Image 1: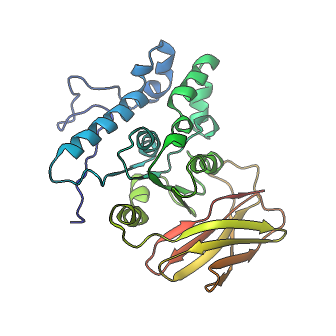
Image 2 (image 1 turned 30 degrees about the horizontal axis):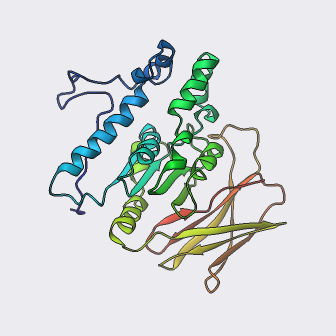
Length: 294
């Protein structure tokens, strides 16, 4: 109904009947994602197969005459977001990518960092060199929409901030959603993904975007662009440096919007550690600024 053809891949190697295909890749288990590397063959690790099958599936999709092969994009949620980061970096045919949650620097994850710590040091470094998205994103050519919550249990906001900075400012748009849950329904509820793809592929109205941020003393400000009027804006901040990412306490403050200068300003606490502006336009599309870290 929206004018797209889509393909979704079972990344555990199952067919339509739920049974293993004859030449299926490994199951999507922690052992196959991490411990398998200690057996010495990189091609046995789940990430290798997952990225490969996504690129192969992209080729299949582009082979159908019904589609426009110059207009393809990719999105994925959680581990799918991680795979999206790598596949979109390797496969230069994608014009746009929207990884949800998934990011790079797995050794800094509150969850996956523990999986990596269980590996012997030499294999931990080998995994990071071979399969961490930080080694691929700097080579990406397409535009990216990064979506994550500020309190995600798995994908910590600090390595997330480092991840999107691997993509040039021109290529990236960031949405840090306050209190976003971690689930497939929460991930695919983001209508901004569709608007983003329609802008890149069809030249339709772009998402709003925060294009510059400045902090001077007790004031933080951003410059924004938006094709539609803004509906709301807030500044979210945290002084909590001891909790896990999931338990970190956040507060928010109202801001001053100067529509003539396209500038948003907020008086901020002097000692906040993390902060970001979050804006929403009258179409309901929300984006954030990139993270302030003091």
